[in-house]
Image (tube, rainbow, N blue to C red; front, side, top):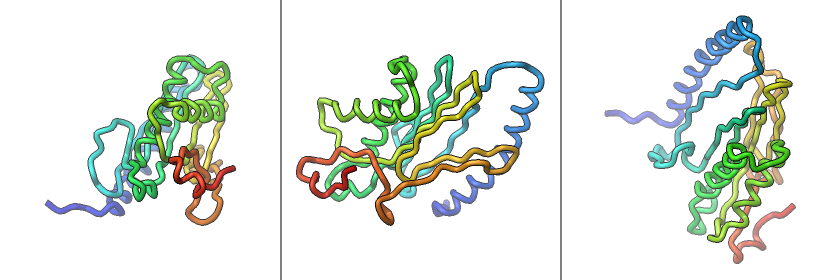
Length: 203
């Protein structure tokens, strides 16, 4: 059995995505013509770790994590990219990003936010893990997108170099902008160990 490199898997995934998305969009356009209803988000996801190590966590790929949630008024997507450099300090970078996304998902599914904007979801998800009884050290970038079903309006919050694209009729009509302090140092949500607080850029 031959193992493919992550680059090959990426090309295979990109090829499948190019074929799948236009077909999915055509099906959704036809469905919208046939019935009058609120906008609904259709999601599909795929991912792989660059280390090719299997993950035992659902909605996690390597150091990255994501969530998909819905309530009566909105569809919500989020992705967090855990910072691998924490491994040098004996910290699993996947734990922080997974906990952040799990908290954000719970906020939506349990209706715990009065005004669930992307910024509020991100802030409250981060606040919840920072108040954890057991210290949860690490950091990640984050991107959260909320689709208002009734108004068909997309709202977003993006921190660091995660991001999203809006594709309409096979054209990219919008892409999020990343933020970084300098090369390879994106803005992050972070909880550093006490002995590392002086080494962390804080805004």
